[in-house]
Image (cartoon, rainbow, N blue to C red; front, top):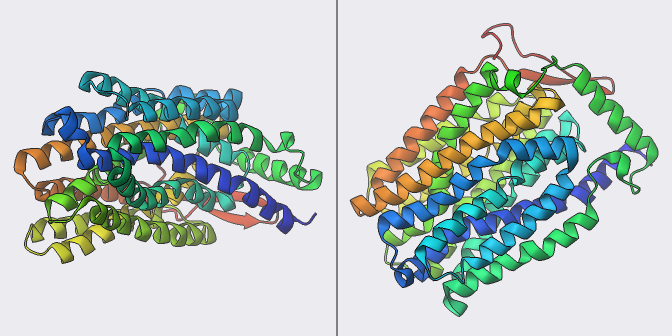
Length: 435
């Protein structure tokens, strides 16, 4: 088997599996906004502040178990961890459509966040065992594409489901696929190439040698404590906190923002809510391709965050005066916020050795979860308190601007270059120091 054929077989077998898995997680995160706009809040008597808290509680649960999940996935099994996570979040997601008491709904939203907290660190660690540095931005993007692609179709399908079977039926129908997929997942994947009978032995040896060479060339880091004190990790944790304020405020409250700014029905809101995620999907694919091709990560992160900030600021300045132009700016903001995800997480894993990279990603993603909690709660509260989304645009713009500036200020990145069969890293330039 040629290297090209084996490369294709790894992609053909694993990329669709991780994409579907992450997609199912995003169904159960983002459909709350459609359910809320489609009758949940009214039927359960949920006020504006309570609705904001319900939208945000998911991320509080999501914050707590990132680092333990990364440790388990790296030292034990990402495959087993994801199996139990799929089962748990499918159950909690479906329960959203059954619960009648608001206090139980608080608990359910929190536990749903706990169940899904393992997904990103476990899946990024899983991919790092199967794909080299030269492929990593694209594999990470294929994973995280489950976010915008799912929100794209989910916004439309969920709106139709609410229209057809009510918000309760929608939550139940969209929670069950995760339970079914858990049993498919556990049959399709292996934790390491050495466990894969379908992989040609020559390619397995070449892949393991390449991954080992990448690790050998990284500066050793003893443990999580040392990694967490790294200036790069600290800076990117703060950066991702701010970035996530914008992203998840947008994801959770876009349907409500569109509905409040127009006279549209729920199905029309679902269609409009999908458009930013189509732009995000295209930009993510383009950005990851050129990031892997150039070997650069930082240069494919900060410009998009600045553009997203400017687009939100433009929406704030327009206010309610021009819905159509404001919507175009929201599409630009949504696409720009998502575009850098693949290069961003590739950047982290290329700067730290395998024994701590997963933990560092988990810490950074935990800070992102806190940012998501702040963004989803603050934007829901601001919309309820001010009667419109304009101030929310300003909050998301400011958070993204800070995130972009922090990324730009981080010291010189490590540019990946090909040297024979080995992939190595060296400073992009001597100026700017090392993060």
